[in-house]
Length: 319
Image 1 (cartoon, rainbow, N blue to C red):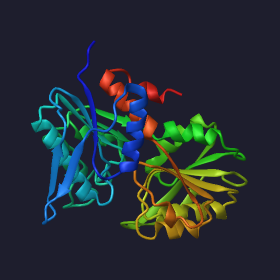
Image 2 (cartoon, one colour; image 1 turned 30 degrees about the horizontal axis):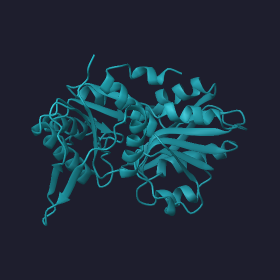
Image 3 (spheres, rainbow, N blue to C red; image 1 turned 135 degrees about the vertical axis):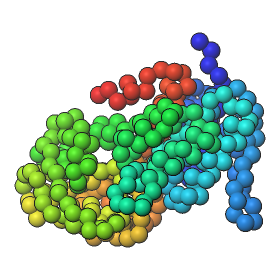
């Protein structure tokens, strides 16, 4: 079956990842990044010019909605609208890090469900499909009325962890909400599972209350989807150390690492933190070399290739 021509464009949020994805696609299908001009008017408004023909094309736009979230989101929306008005036959928003995902429900009166709002905006702007990775909550896929291909960083992390030498490995979920994710890792790594019960007193602050399970004499990996201020992570690590954990590692799909996160990690008992490049990371701030970045370029490149060719993406996760 003959497919529409494949075109790939990228916004400014994560150029290094976009270039790595394009390099993979260049090797696999002979398609690199398309020619796009993104500029700003004097008042800060974003302008976009697609400098090549996309009529009848199957177009993929790579853009994480990380910091500055609103700027990157608006840039993505404008690119999508530009492509829609240029008569692209299908437009897929490739969003390695989906911002606003933590606002996925009304946890108290008179607050928005911003994740749903962003989903509506993407569809209105022209997205026919979304490819993303490790949403904060799986149900966000249901906020869309278009297909969502949900990738998992475990496809990168698990082979990497298997190559490391651990002593009596234990997988730790830092909260009850991450139990399903941690259980999947523990099963595939043949490791025990421990949950940490915590009470969040206010936004971006957490107090570890209890460790449910045995970590005494074990190497542990704390598994989470996002590391933001690292407050929860560091307190979790301290609680595990007090209960006899040997070496403590952490892994998260998205290293937001805002505020004093790096300082907290640097001064903590955590030996190493593994994140992906879904969000750009400035290695110069990691003065003790505690953060290792794993690339998801091949994962997203293969997902784009398979989406274009209408072949299975779920088979990427078969271990």
